[in-house]
Length: 254
Image (cartoon, rainbow, N blue to C red; front, side):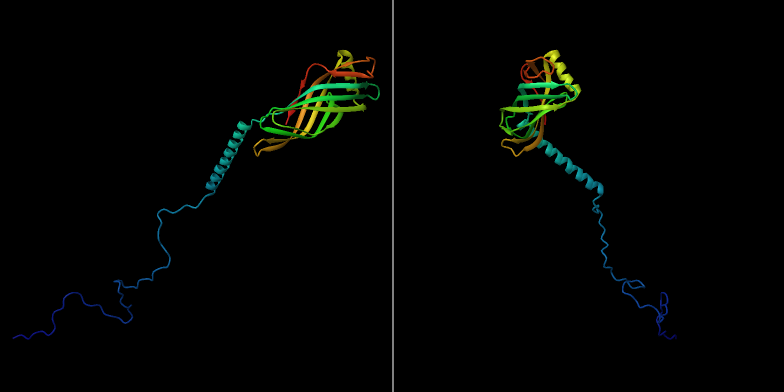
């Protein structure tokens, strides 16, 4: 008769021995402790916003600049269409000379009294013009013979103004070449061509608009022919002359 075994049979692997120096057991199923969570956000953005580049800034700047130029150009175009500014017209309507004398000797000079009439025409329908600091002169072949100041004057829209200019010179020195030239023209053709000039500070103002401008205006009247009569002796002492032909139109620079 056999006796019963007090220990039941054991199946499986033997339990490994436990050592005191072994790490304590963890609750995560791994033989090591889990690290503490980091405070850094590791969220990944699949569509990051790119930082503005220098080329984008330049592109925006150029677009803005071009837009401003286009707007300014449109405003100026509208202004020119509505206002239609035009340069004023000037004419020499009369030129008389008295006591005319030219000396072509060792000290060439000229003595004369000049009376000039100018017609100023403002053709603009919406621009008014004020003329200040007006100066007038007479010359021969670009050599100055006489100068004078002219009183300021004002022109409304589509206005015409007659301007009187008086000039005089006595024993005014000129070059020998031009003294001989004036005498040669007078004795050979009976006429001498002079040049009348006007320089003024013109203030232009558009009627009913904010627009106004200040400009230097230069009036150049070339080839103003004067026919002389009277004493035909050498030197032409006491000669008088009048504008030969009709009105003489001038060039206007503004």
